[in-house]
View 1: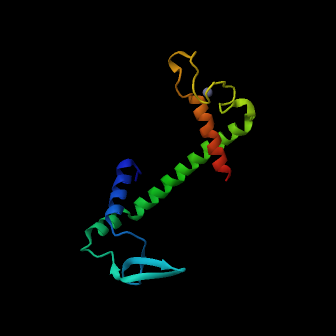
View 2: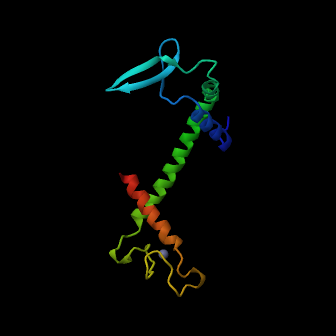
Length: 147
Ligand SMILES: [Zn+2]
């Protein structure tokens, strides 16, 4: 099974149409549940997996084991990919010296207005500097990664 935008949209629509969770099992039926002060109450009076509740039946069948396993694999791949890029960004941020003289610009840049191209830069004049934007996004990502 391939996790693609179509499947994600189908899962999202089915989840939004179904009885809101969380759900739990009372020994006979899947029912809504609530948790108060650490105690789980399975609302046996409110089963959600009845054949008459077609939206819930559709959701349960859409979120079958093959779909969930494929979704978990997809999440693991995305997480590994995100971690790889996070490590790259953090390495770049650590490598470049931080100077107080940058006045809000990326290292090696000297805009009069932080992050905005000066008037003598032709068509770029007055527009946002992509390198400054990228640098500040990388610094923010590295800081949030360290938290
Ligand atoms: Zn710049």
